[in-house]
Amino acid sequence: MNIKLIYVAAALAFLCAAAACESKTIVKIGSHATVAENQTVNNVVTIGGQITVNGLVENNVVAIGGSVVVTSKAVVRGNVVAIGGVVATGSGAQIFGKVTEMNSANITASLGSIFRGEPDAWSAALNIFSLYFHAIIFILAIFMSLLFPRTLTALTKSIQNNKIKSFFWGFLISLMIPPILILLVFSIIGIYLLPLAFISLAAAFMLGYIAAAALLGNTTLAAVFSSYKKSPVKETILGLIMLLALGWLPYIGWLIRIVALTMGLGGVMLGMFSHRRQRTAAT
Image 1 (cartoon, rainbow, N blue to C red):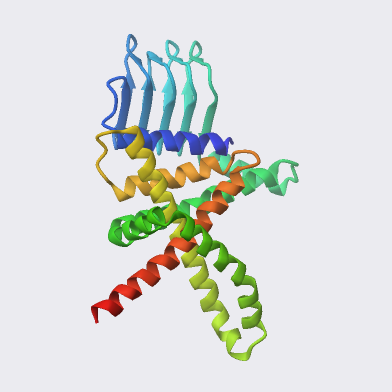
Image 2: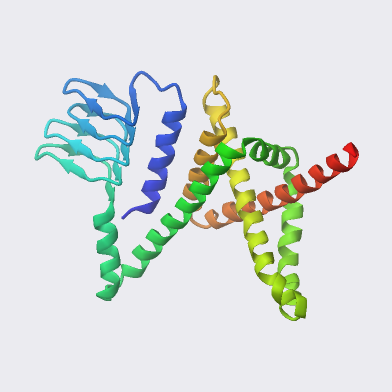
């Protein structure tokens, strides 16, 4: 199971869905897509639908929540990815890239290999756990962008307007976390406050990470599409996928995620102080 390719494919899907879509790119949400026998397209992306390829696809075929059928006369010069489905290929089908499936069958097989003691089983299990953990972050991010778009936009602007200051405050707070937690552990009242401190800290990190992702998504979409209309949901999802994909880069991937976490945490703190100052000034 190629988790890296899944992240890249998901990023491609949301990039295409966010655009007005080129004439040679097929994007379907909630419906099926078909490439006719004599048809040539650049990419095919569906969310919640099946893809049937009879013609030529110059780049990638990505189905999220659906399957892909590559018939015997089809040619795909890029990758074929099915998340939540299967890839069925005809005997004469030509696929020059990688074929990746992620569904309940191979997840079950990966978990079963752990009990059989296979050497690569734990690596696959960690990849699955990582994917599900990040899926929870995605769900929280979608709820936040839908229910509290103003709060998310305010935090994003706080980071955007104070990048260096956000990183500095986030770094400073990160350094203060261990001594504060130790102090709480060894104090009588601190024992009762420790769960609240953990919850508050986790919420601040997650909120900041989502805001940093939204900023990255907004910057990317605005740079790629000149007529892009602002959408907190698209920006947040794309930014999270990009951070996940960038995190797989060798040597610097972990650093990119840490910078995003640190800037996000600092942005949350700056946003809280700014909001408090505004309330004080208003009174």
